[in-house]
Length: 493
Image (cartoon, rainbow, N blue to C red):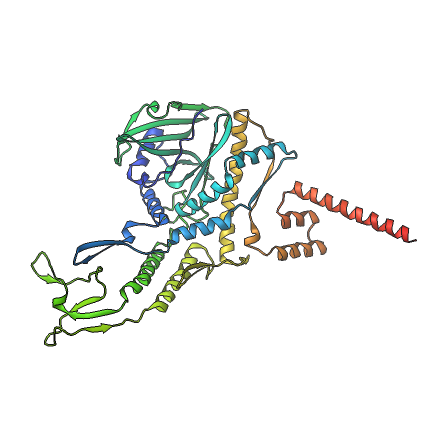
């Protein structure tokens, strides 16, 4: 009935007076988000992409006038977000649905597989850690259930019920000919009915305003102005955020970036890394020559000035005074490689502390940034941070499955039971020693402190229903072995 209109918007929301526009469109004054908060999201986005102009555009002068260069960086926001997303969710993660029968579970898994859930979800978890939030939206297209993924800067939360976001606006910005079009797709509860409103706005290309309301048919021929759904009990989207308290806007329920409280440290490391690479460029051998051998630059006041000429790095002018102007002196510099590496590593330790990673997770060497790859101890800072984020992410996945169930039933695609158990089996092999874990539960069973059923669930990361099947299979195999032993003993007699 309505197409997937959500696409990534980069660098628009905070410039468009968007919150006020959404308030006007939805007739809701208590929108969760604020314009100022989207300024923060835009900074996080630019840092994640590897270039924040206020930090990374360096201006300087040479004899050829003002020059500009891009500062060298380690792109730590990308590294931090990717590392945490990989620790939390990867292709080894398994979603088990226990319903007593397999049809519903198989249908949900087919939907997830058809939508490339494993790949896309990990990517958008990375965006979530970078920009403070993400949304998964469920809809129907050509009689099939689709899942779209939206990052924080192209979604505006409208209503929060104390547990989750229940109303929100999705936005898409596209350019066509000489115009910029912004599609606002609002998901609202009106008189108890789930209502989706679509509005299209047009303005001049490059404009920072939302623009003028135009017919949807201008760009979207099959998109309806309003769709009212009477039998929905939950939103058709799920908002997920990092499990980090928002200390930027304390009263806000929006999520913040994994590195929101480490910006000063990241900036310092960028300065140090840039200095490290410049050390090799500027620390080359210099040859000091007489001033008349070097070009001069006349400034606006008519004074003659000499600048370091990056196009001619070997020669440097010096006024020798009474000494011979023909004097030539060679100077070699000692490179401060170790000092730079030590300073960068000291700041990386602070960065680990600020972002929830264990000390030593990231280290810098002459060859570049290194990430620790050993098994993570359950007592480590990284493991505890990962477990904290998993709490909200697991809840988000369960909410997504519930939404898929409701949408599938609404469009008569498939149905599910009223009660079912969802178990998200995150890949703990990167965060625990499987042999140690198995030995731990075996000892509990042996001492009578846990059942075999519990042990199977914990060690193999399966649901209770699956554990029962495994336990029955073990019992059958043990009985078969006992029967074989009895048979062999009778033959011997």
